[in-house]
Amino acid sequence: MLHHGFYRMVTTIVFIAAIYFAGAANAAPAATNEETPKTLGVVLYPGFEVLDVFGPVEMFMSLGTSKVRVVMIAEKAGEVPSGAGGDKAGAWSGPKVVAEYGFDNAPQIDLLMVPGGFGTMQQTQNAVCLNFLRERADKAQYVMSVCSGSAILAKAGLLDGKKATCNKQFYGLLTSNGPKVDWQPKARWVEDGKFITSSGVSAGTDMALAVIAKLYGEDTANGIAKGTEYVWNADPSNDPFAKDAK
Amino acid sequence: MLHHGFYRMVTTIVFIAAIYFAGAANAAPAATNEETPKTLGVVLYPGFEVLDVFGPVEMFMSLGTSKVRVVMIAEKAGEVPSGAGGDKAGAWSGPKVVAEYGFDNAPQIDLLMVPGGFGTMQQTQNAVCLNFLRERADKAQYVMSVCSGSAILAKAGLLDGKKATCNKQFYGLLTSNGPKVDWQPKARWVEDGKFITSSGVSAGTDMALAVIAKLYGEDTANGIAKGTEYVWNADPSNDPFAKDAK
Image 1 (tube, rainbow over the protein chains, first blue to last red):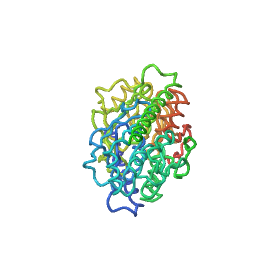
Image 2: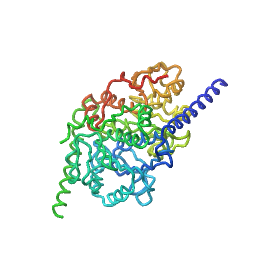
Image 3: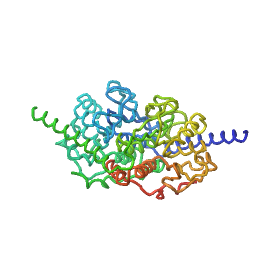
Image 4: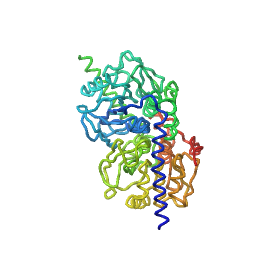
């Protein structure tokens, strides 16, 4: 038992040391944006798609809170249910994620991110959400969307005259929300000024690493991909799903 | 304005029809396990890794609630904070996910899943968690883990004499939790009887699609990968991160 207890203690110390080392290793190469942590504000709504949110969030969280603080925001603070394609519209029975802030008390957002999901269409007709996005996009350093999230940005008028992309499965429907947007049918993600829009669901993770590379360098992005055992598609023009665009 | 309203209505109808169609398309090819929905029980704990959970959950949710119902479970029901490598140990400041059930009132679990994360080591020493896993693994059809989650299963003794894998970055530390486990240093995921353990973080998504293929057929798994624009690594022996195993 003594040996067992000692072993546990050593294991725990090694693990804590590993965490500190991982933090220090992360901190070292980033010379560009070290001053204060940036705030990544993720806008949740009923029927958001879980991987649209947590693919990118995983990558940003891996930077550590000294670089990026992740905050979940919704129209009203509280628990927000996710949804999926197999559900009937409006029956958002997926796992609930806590929005710590409502639109009324959200902090300054440096990196604004709008996920997609089957709840998207309700938000394209929600003036409160569109107004919040217009107001906060104006003050953000970068505005990202994943999947159908770009339809909400488009409906807010934020993508007018800009290049953007979205989910390829519902391409025609989604792009109809932005007749003045220069939609790209073949792109894993598209950058135009401060707006960076990704293709469907999984593409958001690739986009997030690209944004991390812009802010903190390629080495940091590659280190995070390796740490999360993620095969990063780092080429925005490599869109394996473009052929489905209608 | 009349035209605009009409356009909105048509758009909405098309979208709702698309959702129903997607649901129907999903339902069609699955002849194997149609009777009652299976329950995927995901065990959350403070400091769980978000993509470990939501990569697989995205894929299972894409089956629709007629096939799989996803439930979040924790030692006590309520909000559970996630964590990441950049955080100091114990300071789990990540997004919170709601556990609808506690260990005391969790429903029957058909597909049990244990994520990894920097909170793993605390759970390897949490007898309440280990007991719950032993009890529920016994009654489950499949028991999955992602990343360091297999260290918890190993500590519970569930992997003794079985082939398993885990995260490759902390391989030595994690495998020390199961001296009687036949650990595999090169595997995207490993299946041994009812236990299916994946490598780090992103590997869980590949494993989830493999389990979906086992339960509902390859076509269904490929359809979900396409719908979520995910490049599925469908070969468990293709482990791009195996070289880091220590």
